[in-house]
Image 1 (cartoon, helix red, strand yellow):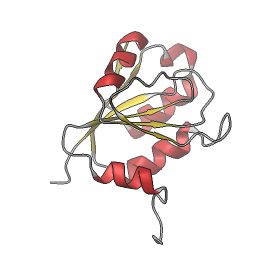
Image 2 (tube, rainbow, N blue to C red):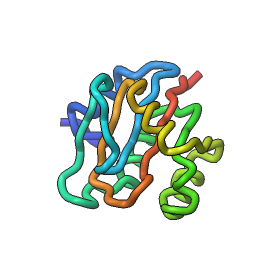
Image 3 (cartoon, one colour):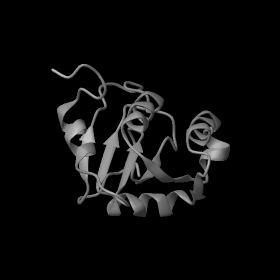
Image 4 (cartoon, one colour):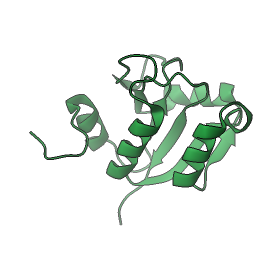
Amino acid sequence: MRRGGILNAQLAGALARLGHTDTLVVCDAGLPIPPGPEAVDLAFKLGIPAFETVLSGILKELVVEGAIAAEEIETQNSHSHELIKARLPDLVLVPHEELKRMVAEAKLVVRTGEATPYSNVVLSCGVPF
C-alpha cells in the first residue's frame, strides 16, 4: 500500500500516464462526459468527494501549465472561482458550452461528487523541468 498521495488505483495510474500538453478535467457530478476520454468516477454521494478536495489532491501530484474554466463560474459559483484562481492564477475563462466541447478532447476526466454548478476545470499538463 502507498504511504500517501492518491490511493485510488485507477486515478493514480491514469495520472501517471499523462504527459506534457495532455489535458484532464476535474468536474462536478453533473458535467456530461462524452465517449473518448478515460473517466475516473469518484462520486459517492452528492457533495462527496468535494471538487476542492479532489482538485487539491491532483494539484499535489501534477505539474500544471494552464487551466480553463467556464466564464459562468465568476457569477454562478464564486467559491469555486476563487479556489481555482488562488491555485491557478493564469486561469482562462471560456463559455460553458466551449468548455463542454473541450471535455471530449481531454485524455482524462475525473468526476467528483460536487453538486455546485460550474465546478469544472480543464488542466493542461506541464513538465517539472
